[in-house]
Length: 438
Image 1: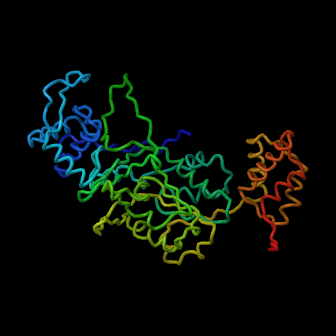
Image 2: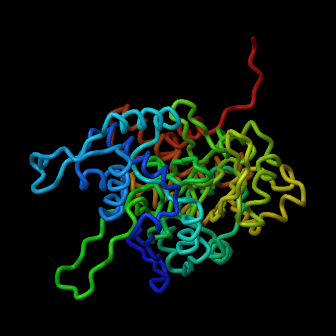
Image 3: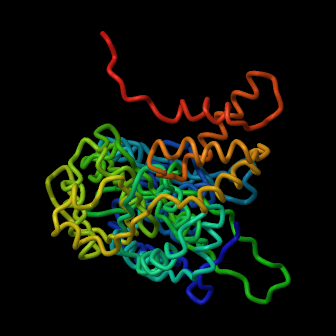
């Protein structure tokens, strides 16, 4: 689905650095990462090195000149085979010794990290709080769902605010699907750093499992205006969506230290910067829901998070994430009032009424090529649902129709529904409450 978010609000890409001074990184750190990259990847030309460390050639040339002055790198004296007129370089004995020392301190090499302070500036350019979704955009993203008429009216302002949302209600009524619809409605792209630097420590951020890399934009050869390249230490991505469920623990919200590489990996909420963090099935985690929400209080109220290095040093990172909590419990059962105040929007997601249930049932049947049968539907509505107090849920049409399809395929008969097949499908949807004789 191709949707655009407020074209006047297009995300400004991070500008490429033009010099070592623009980098705002410790010079020794940059030089050592260049040496380690050259050593680990067996690279020898300016072009290869610039691509590997994700920097403009002019900046890498400055670093090479510095390393040569310090007798850590030398020209090989001949042009590099297959590289046109490019000079090739190699590490000197002193350079190899310095590289080994640098690797002993940190195995990190490759893309030069972005200083945390520089990343803060980019976060402001692409803030989730700057997104303004229209009713039409949200409706298009939820078009495959049958929703209560007032839901979009409640959801739209909540999403556009970029503040926290709590969705609650009976299970199986589409809270997860609605969360995914919010994600789909955000059609713009942002820039995610491959790694960031704080106090000389490297924290990797870009994660191909979380971040969906966007296709490269091509310049129109007929256009008079050509796009300027952006800082390739960043990856242009769709706004990220991190979805966690019962497996979420407080430790997953802390920096992860790799003692072998001596680098850190960003926690889930930092990877979700500029996007959505969905806490699904809240109340099913090993951690009490109150503890999880307490962990979010400072980020939700002050738009900043506090992380800690191995040394114990704590530092602030921006918190620019739309947090969506989804639970089958009533909020008053799992939160105190102080915690509930911190969650800006509370939206109840109820099951469908009979009319919407039948609409969902018909849509699912059509999609799965299951012909409708009036006698079967009358049996379902007037015989089966009264046994559960006529409580309908959005998941039930899919469940019942899939059950009937499986029976038809096993019996070798065309897809069909009947009162008998409804009974057989229904028997698998609920477990009879009875005592098991041991």
